[in-house]
Image (cartoon, rainbow, N blue to C red; front, side, top):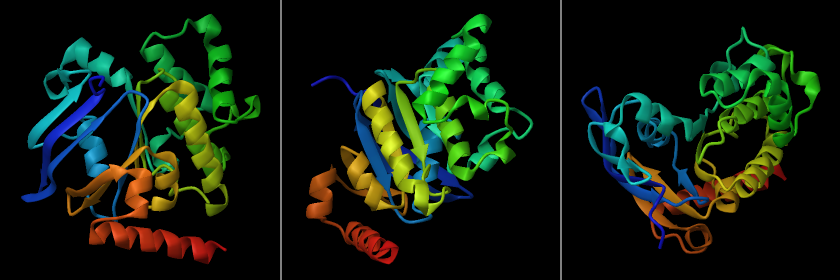
Length: 256
């Protein structure tokens, strides 16, 4: 068995004296998609940020390609972070309103010196094609985009440095229900075409069960169940998992 790309061991995060992540452990292989599901307040987004060092954990380890990610600094940390990208829940808060789509997508390419300026527009157009957008959005600002278009731009920006790991933090929940399925299909297509490892964080098992190889169920900051996606949906072992499955089925009935 190949060594995991990302390994999280006994990760703890405290906030205001309260433990919001409680000894979370999991491993993620190259090209694998792991779903992290749980109700609101279960610690999902905190986990995403702690794994990427957007906040510092109180205890535990995060290993990236076998190295202690929490101990990296300087050039080594920047190199690792280039390979680890995130798509946040709401593109309205993650995209700079002063920048055009061209500038938003050019920024990571220039910062990481991944594209010469004369080839920049061609590379940006290719990124837009990857997320099913055309050149007509190039010179628009975020407020001139629909919610679905803005989230696709956020996804294209995350893909710009050709990461090995993509963290999708509730990336479908802020877009209209009518285009959630389109975005889910896009995530699935990109995952296979780019051989990305993906940490797919969601409260909704409907899409998680389809997109992910395995699913970890988070409750009160702890993983209460982790299994292959099909097995978890077919034969859940924990009450929290059963409640999430029931909620997903009820949501599907209401949509019909």
